[in-house]
Length: 140
Image: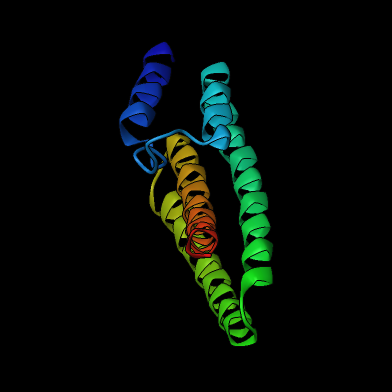
Protein backbone atom coordinates (compact mmCIF):
# COMPACT_ATOMS: atom_id res chain seq x y z
CA UNK A 1 0.00 0.00 0.00
CA UNK A 2 2.79 2.39 0.90
CA UNK A 3 4.58 1.68 -2.40
CA UNK A 4 1.36 2.40 -4.31
CA UNK A 5 0.93 5.72 -2.50
CA UNK A 6 4.54 6.71 -3.22
CA UNK A 7 4.11 5.73 -6.88
CA UNK A 8 0.97 7.87 -7.17
CA UNK A 9 2.65 10.89 -5.57
CA UNK A 10 5.70 10.52 -7.82
CA UNK A 11 3.46 10.14 -10.87
CA UNK A 12 1.48 13.26 -10.00
CA UNK A 13 4.68 15.21 -9.43
CA UNK A 14 5.90 14.28 -12.91
CA UNK A 15 2.50 14.39 -14.63
CA UNK A 16 1.02 17.53 -12.97
CA UNK A 17 -1.24 18.87 -15.75
CA UNK A 18 -1.28 22.33 -14.20
CA UNK A 19 2.45 22.96 -14.20
CA UNK A 20 4.26 25.32 -16.53
CA UNK A 21 1.33 27.61 -17.27
CA UNK A 22 2.62 30.79 -15.68
CA UNK A 23 5.94 32.16 -14.47
CA UNK A 24 4.40 33.24 -11.17
CA UNK A 25 2.19 30.72 -9.45
CA UNK A 26 -1.45 31.75 -9.11
CA UNK A 27 -2.92 31.70 -5.57
CA UNK A 28 -5.33 28.93 -6.62
CA UNK A 29 -2.37 26.79 -7.70
CA UNK A 30 -0.56 27.51 -4.45
CA UNK A 31 -3.62 26.46 -2.45
CA UNK A 32 -4.06 23.36 -4.60
CA UNK A 33 -0.43 22.33 -4.13
CA UNK A 34 -0.73 22.80 -0.37
CA UNK A 35 -3.93 20.72 -0.37
CA UNK A 36 -2.24 17.95 -2.36
CA UNK A 37 0.66 17.86 0.11
CA UNK A 38 -1.74 17.63 3.04
CA UNK A 39 -4.00 15.02 1.42
CA UNK A 40 -1.84 12.31 -0.17
CA UNK A 41 -4.62 9.72 -0.57
CA UNK A 42 -6.25 9.31 -3.96
CA UNK A 43 -9.56 10.50 -2.50
CA UNK A 44 -7.85 13.50 -0.89
CA UNK A 45 -6.01 14.46 -4.07
CA UNK A 46 -9.20 14.15 -6.11
CA UNK A 47 -10.97 16.45 -3.65
CA UNK A 48 -8.11 18.98 -3.92
CA UNK A 49 -8.53 19.12 -7.69
CA UNK A 50 -12.31 19.43 -7.38
CA UNK A 51 -11.89 22.34 -4.96
CA UNK A 52 -9.37 24.01 -7.28
CA UNK A 53 -11.73 23.53 -10.24
CA UNK A 54 -14.46 25.37 -8.35
CA UNK A 55 -12.07 28.23 -7.61
CA UNK A 56 -10.96 28.38 -11.26
CA UNK A 57 -14.60 28.45 -12.31
CA UNK A 58 -15.14 31.48 -10.06
CA UNK A 59 -12.09 33.11 -11.64
CA UNK A 60 -13.42 32.29 -15.11
CA UNK A 61 -16.79 33.89 -14.32
CA UNK A 62 -15.11 36.94 -12.79
CA UNK A 63 -13.06 37.64 -15.91
CA UNK A 64 -15.96 36.84 -18.21
CA UNK A 65 -18.03 39.56 -16.50
CA UNK A 66 -15.15 42.05 -16.43
CA UNK A 67 -14.38 41.47 -20.10
CA UNK A 68 -18.04 41.55 -21.09
CA UNK A 69 -18.45 44.98 -19.48
CA UNK A 70 -15.49 46.34 -21.48
CA UNK A 71 -16.60 45.14 -24.91
CA UNK A 72 -18.65 46.83 -27.60
CA UNK A 73 -22.09 45.43 -28.39
CA UNK A 74 -20.72 43.26 -31.19
CA UNK A 75 -17.84 42.14 -28.96
CA UNK A 76 -20.31 41.14 -26.26
CA UNK A 77 -22.25 38.99 -28.73
CA UNK A 78 -19.06 37.30 -29.93
CA UNK A 79 -17.92 36.68 -26.35
CA UNK A 80 -21.28 35.14 -25.49
CA UNK A 81 -21.14 32.93 -28.59
CA UNK A 82 -17.57 31.88 -27.85
CA UNK A 83 -18.37 31.12 -24.22
CA UNK A 84 -21.41 29.04 -25.17
CA UNK A 85 -19.26 27.09 -27.63
CA UNK A 86 -16.57 26.63 -24.97
CA UNK A 87 -19.13 25.33 -22.48
CA UNK A 88 -20.37 22.81 -25.06
CA UNK A 89 -16.75 21.79 -25.73
CA UNK A 90 -16.04 21.55 -21.99
CA UNK A 91 -19.03 19.32 -21.40
CA UNK A 92 -18.09 16.99 -24.27
CA UNK A 93 -14.46 16.92 -23.16
CA UNK A 94 -15.52 16.10 -19.59
CA UNK A 95 -17.66 13.26 -20.96
CA UNK A 96 -14.67 11.93 -22.90
CA UNK A 97 -12.39 12.25 -19.87
CA UNK A 98 -14.92 10.42 -17.71
CA UNK A 99 -15.22 7.56 -20.17
CA UNK A 100 -11.48 7.40 -20.72
CA UNK A 101 -10.36 7.56 -17.10
CA UNK A 102 -13.27 5.79 -15.38
CA UNK A 103 -14.26 3.14 -17.91
CA UNK A 104 -11.30 2.49 -20.22
CA UNK A 105 -8.59 2.48 -17.56
CA UNK A 106 -8.46 0.66 -14.26
CA UNK A 107 -7.18 2.06 -11.01
CA UNK A 108 -8.06 4.87 -8.65
CA UNK A 109 -5.05 6.95 -9.69
CA UNK A 110 -6.86 7.59 -12.98
CA UNK A 111 -9.65 9.26 -11.03
CA UNK A 112 -7.11 11.74 -9.71
CA UNK A 113 -5.77 12.28 -13.21
CA UNK A 114 -9.30 12.92 -14.51
CA UNK A 115 -9.90 15.52 -11.81
CA UNK A 116 -6.57 17.18 -12.61
CA UNK A 117 -7.31 17.31 -16.33
CA UNK A 118 -10.78 18.71 -15.75
CA UNK A 119 -9.34 21.36 -13.46
CA UNK A 120 -6.72 22.25 -16.06
CA UNK A 121 -9.38 22.75 -18.73
CA UNK A 122 -11.25 25.27 -16.58
CA UNK A 123 -8.03 26.98 -15.53
CA UNK A 124 -6.94 27.37 -19.14
CA UNK A 125 -10.19 29.12 -20.10
CA UNK A 126 -10.07 31.35 -17.02
CA UNK A 127 -6.55 32.45 -17.93
CA UNK A 128 -7.58 33.07 -21.55
CA UNK A 129 -10.38 35.39 -20.45
CA UNK A 130 -8.06 37.09 -17.99
CA UNK A 131 -5.53 37.70 -20.77
CA UNK A 132 -8.21 39.23 -23.02
CA UNK A 133 -9.33 41.49 -20.19
CA UNK A 134 -5.80 42.56 -19.26
CA UNK A 135 -4.96 43.22 -22.92
CA UNK A 136 -7.99 45.51 -23.19
CA UNK A 137 -6.91 47.41 -20.09
CA UNK A 138 -3.34 47.66 -21.34
CA UNK A 139 -4.37 49.10 -24.70
CA UNK A 140 -6.41 51.92 -23.15
